[in-house]
Image 1 (cartoon, rainbow, N blue to C red):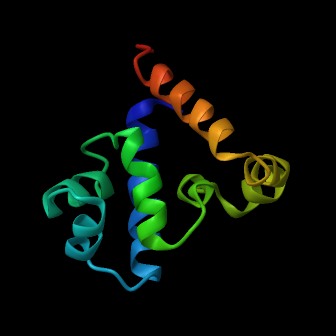
Image 2 (cartoon, one colour):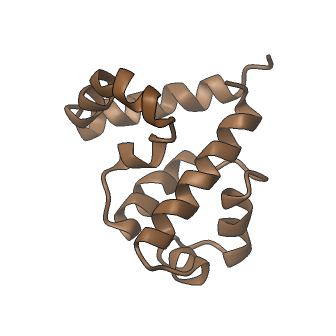
Length: 110
């Protein structure tokens, strides 16, 4: 998956979770300490999200961090169940390492 596609999929997932939490973009922006426009950009895949905002978003939505990254089709979800369970078992420090790895991967030009 190209990074541009990743941002779009992440944005769709973020919007879905925000709506499930019955939150407006304004409310999420306030809790994450960003402008409402920033949340809109994230949801539309126009701007990449900074890694330090991910835990704040998960906290605001009252979900575990890994749920922000579940944007697979139903068939893929079944096939990738082991990955989800693996992420659930990780500690905060291990998740930080994974997110730092993702950050470095974002710098790679495909």
